[in-house]
Amino acid sequence: MTEKLWEIEPSGPLRGDVTVRGAKNAVSKHMVAAMLGAEPSTIRNAPDVGEVGITAGILEHVGMAVERSGGEITVVPRPVADPSVGKAFTGLNRIPILMLGPLLHLAGEAFVPLVGGDPIGRRPVDFHVDALRAFGAEVTIAADGIHARASRLVGTRIDLPYPSVGATETVLLAAVRAQGKTVIRNAATEPEIIELALFLQRMGARISFAPDRRIVVEGVDRLGGAVTRLEGDRIEAFSYLVAGLVTRGEVRVHGCPQDRLVTAITTLARMGARFEITDDWIMASAPDGLRPAAVQTDTHPGFATDWQTPLMVLFTQADGMSVLHETVYENRLAYVPALQSMGAEIEVYDTCLGGPACRYHDTAALHSAVVRGVSKLRGGDVTMPDIRAGFSAVLAAAVAEGPSTLRGVHHIERGYHRPVEQFRALGLALKAV
Image (cartoon, rainbow, N blue to C red; front, side, top):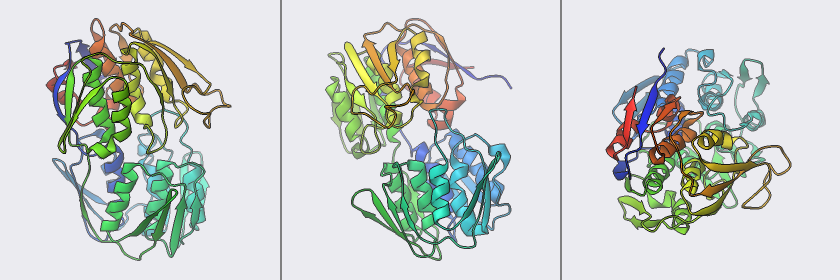
């Protein structure tokens, strides 16, 4: 199969309108949740991303029916034909691990292959496995994947060592039909988690939010179907706002509510960005240039780790020294060498810079960066290692001197809604070959 490439010619400031659809990080989890219903469920405003196709394939493999039409996905629950997620799905994304709870409810047993997703750092399955064992499941980790069995999951108390989004999703999907009450302490509270909980509640789940990152779930015997419309992708919205700023242009983003971008908007405003915000769209510009900043990523409601990749490119165009401290994934800065090869002046460190000591402070993880701006970026031949790094490479290419060739574009197509069309609409000279 011929490798897909993007060829980009810098074409000046990016200007125009972009409409974002539902989040890549939400749609696939809703599709898995829909398995638990007795009737079909429909998810609207779904993005056209590779993640949807991968997840649909997983659901169909175990026996569900998935219907897709435009931005609408309908999952029709059917008896489980095979409680083993095929090994063909090994390493494609993180969805197989989330199938364990639903398959245990529906079939009493499950096998899922080893997890995948972007190579941004360890995403240990321990939290997931420990949680399922607390529900009463027998779980075995083998070389090829995870085997689990349970005649009935029973409500329990889960204390997460870290507010992991994936682990919180696993617990929610197991708890909603478990016998009795489940309390999740130190739960993740990202908007996509809330959105999933609201969808499950529409299906008939009994879920309460308590103070101090606690979620309480009272298990029910039966869930029905539900219809929901996904809110706009906050990561994609931020990425396109930065696309305008980094090229000295102006992008207006529709479809993502302001409350999902509160921390991001203020961070960009401190750097000199000016905003116009309405109920329908958000627009950013920086007519007077950009100032440096010190930013630390964190769990919600902090600055999201997925926002820092486009921010790093923006730092290269700010006048002065900026600092980035990544606290969520220890290998999130693996994309930096690609930017360095394009002329970005970035140094990475294994110490905690720009914020208090984090859980990686006594490790060798390179999780802090100092960026000198304004860097004169030059075009290059770059391989995208993951979804968010892929977007940062596009931004760097858009502001560089000379053409760039970007490889590994399937990553960005897995996570962003029709990115070629969106970038071209903003005026970027992008050729997909």
